[in-house]
Length: 138
Image (tube, rainbow, N blue to C red; front, side):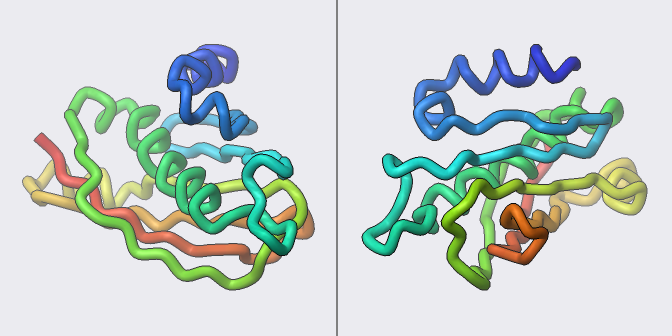
């Protein structure tokens, strides 16, 4: 799926369109999403609200799975997400998610669920948050 197609799919979801999340980089099983800094999604201190940071991170995991050629054919359901926030960001953030060969193998071997790590970085490459999303497969 091209960047334009992925962005069109995200824009079709009103909530995501409101946040302004865009696909910056994509290849099978890997995605980088950008959440632009905007006053509409900031907290009282002018930093991107942790709810918006969580959303872009959680979405990155789901999109990475949906773009993987072997896993895209399977229905995946997000079961839980753990998040650690490190520092606030007053700039755009990017969420990075990559499906590893070990994850694909685990699903192929019948694993009921896998945990996908996601990093959210600020414009200087510093950790804003780290997520671990657990996905189940059908």
